[in-house]
Length: 45
Image (spheres, helix red, strand yellow):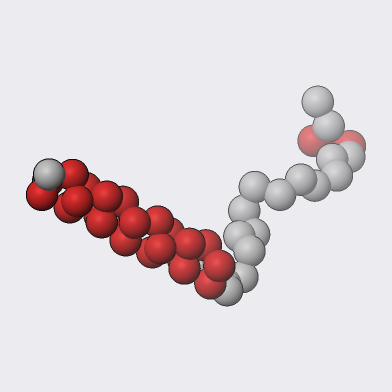
């Protein structure tokens, strides 16, 4: 019974931490690499 309570508590704490991190967001600049660009001339294949 004690192990079950600990498991439920650990899952709850993990859920709260994940929710906080998701709501807070990264707040950084989006990455510049990997974006699409228009190809023209010899680059176009």
